[in-house]
Length: 107
Length: 417
Image (cartoon, rainbow over all chains, first blue to last red):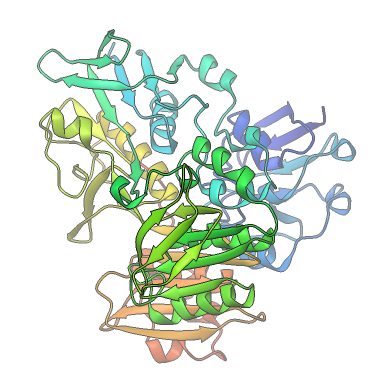
């Protein structure tokens, strides 16, 4: 299973295995990793699963659509060029080793 | 150590249990659920799950191991038959009883059905609430078949969208003058009426079902306008009632749901409640919300209160619905509005409807317009009400209306309880 590293805003790292086909958000939720809330359960409706993808990985992830971009534009914490909603990133073998960082707040 | 029993293993029950552990509660926690499944998300049931685009495992809120690791005892498929408040025990349908020091009721809501005497219990007639409901109806969603949807609220419209997307012949009847009448302004109703008609749904407003009939299974529907429709199956989405039976039988105060205060306390100091089954104070009124975000936030605030927090729960209501390629997001509660303004969004088909009472912004419905939704949600939470004429001007950049640090900017307080 691909291993994903989640880094909390305070620097705490969590590296966990996440099954193919799950989202990066679901990987955090199932492993009780703090810093991702995902109130809507992954419907791209709430923008509370904002993460900064490590720049070395951003090109391996499909681009965001307009809805995700708009949600991110209004996310609670400042966004970066690699900001994504974790519910919209599907885990697959080629993302083994992915690193994402959580913002200070999800709102 | 305090022993907590939670009745109802839906979103509110699971969130409450998880939050209790997260906040350091060390005593036993038992989560009782009448359904067989692990606690799961309901919103996708009438959306992606019914469409066949989401597997059942992904509905689960957490894997089973999560509860085990946190010593949250999950008991499925058990119903509670009574609460003995004096003895502080609950009795289960297998005859056993469980003691509690604190009890939480997260019993949710039950879908209304058409009465049996009108054919509401005929095979081929479905409601949309549980995984079992949706698994039972899913095989009916076959291209070319005819479905009658009773009720033009969000559940009915979502079911209609799934059916139409899968090539069924869909008729939807709404007894009120227009679809979404109870929950939205005419502009929002019109948007969804056009959307569904564009997908071939036959929407009939101001028309109810007089009766359903069929030999051993539903086959026809007599409508209130005298029409008789042939149909292969019927989906009923005519609302829910809060599941207050146990609370009522135990003598707890009921007021459009189990009456709780802003800390989830019922009229018994040892019994708390959260989620769809409750009514609670909100901006000087008492409201009951049928929504996952409220189930989560209220349950978490109630968990904190059970451990002694004196912080009140302040709801920030929001909702969403997915129909075809349209995402509706709603911020706030529009009850009591006296004016609406419409704002076209940047993308094709994007529109938002803003609800005001006097000069106060109450709510926004945003269709494929996350920018309006996110802005409106923040403004409503922050008590910021831009003039309606400004909001309705599509040239006005919403983001420019409230600078960081102003009442319209993101609240900085931590969320939840």
